[in-house]
Length: 261
Ligand SMILES: [Zn+2]
Ligand SMILES: [Zn+2]
Image 1 (spheres, protein in one colour):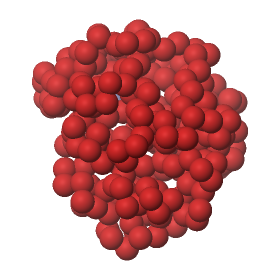
Image 2 (spheres, protein in one colour):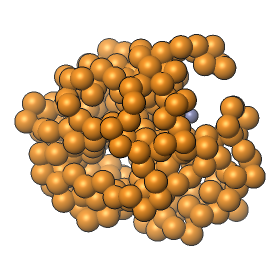
Image 3 (cartoon, rainbow, N blue to C red):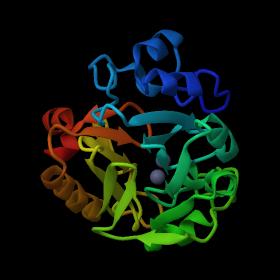
């Protein structure tokens, strides 16, 4: 089952975080919980998903089309990526001693930002998105071109993100790579410091696939340029956390993803 609606199987809950476990840990796989249950060992063991041993990543699968929301925790500080729905529930599942610094949207589609308002109100974190997608995000609570709506329209961003911007939480740093194609303001967050080997790619890249380009503001030509750029700039050893579906690694995608050929 998708854990976003019920949350009791979700790998973002307190016990797993205290465990040092995270998305894809063995217990979750046995649970039939979320996180894809990958057998490649990407997330299992003391360190999580390639992050520094002290850092943790939790994944929440939220909303009607199972959007992956990630919480990256380092030194008591947290960055949440793509709270697509259920912002209040996400806040409640974060450890109480963690300060959420940033809520980052990889792009403005409703399924990635419908929970921003509630999560921001619950945590006081700064909401960040590309200026190019900020307006789109403000309609998350209204029916999209696909006929779906999410909890709330996103608020005005507290900061807008562009190429080269760096967000720091604890000892982790995330650099913004502009990644248009799925939407005009899509971004990728590439980790360094204690988040080296971690990358959040939103709906730009999926395991074996890439994001659709037929929605408003999408462009196949632009997507091809973005994918070529990611192929150059994301190191092969990087663990790639996608907006939907299983995590993967850049190495696996370079070998198997037809869109990176
Ligand atoms: Zn999208
Ligand atoms: Zn999506």
